[in-house]
Length: 224
Picture (cartoon, rainbow, N blue to C red):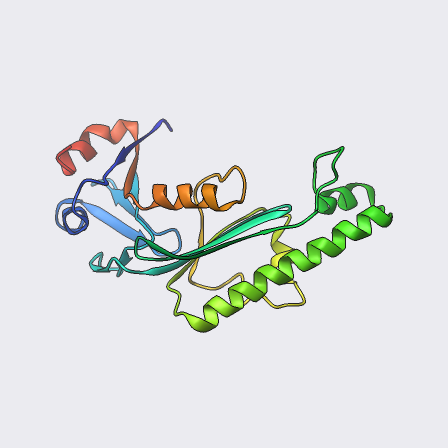
């Protein structure tokens, strides 16, 4: 499928949702992915709108508010960043770092041990740092979730590191099946505050993604 996309940032949120409700032949709101699927008369999916995470939308596609509190977490080997947003306002952020990467090879100790199965002194140091790294992350997450009512939890983390997050001695304050979880749909090149903040800004705009064979239909629907 050849995919196109249109930024709907300059359109009123209420108008976007009302247009879908009243003009689209069919639609379906996916809470987990926070997208609205757009269907034609043949029930083909023509495209979808990726909604900003600060929009609070019910399943009838009415906007309940634009001040959702979202916790953003991005983790890679040796680096992590956390931001908490209230609507579009960044009210908290912090970063973490740890010595988890073998300098010469440039990949994480976790991946190295899975491949080689060795445990030399340097390896044990890096593994100890890894354990502490995830304990510190979970301690911070626990404090935030204890203090605030969080509407959505946006997570960007490789499958290799996911077990370390959820199996840490300091328990992660949410589990893999938490209905608030949202997979960050952007590639973040490095888990630091600057890159996470840039990703959050991109996600604050509603984006229409579409199969180009339906481009004219969707342009007509949204008067583009």
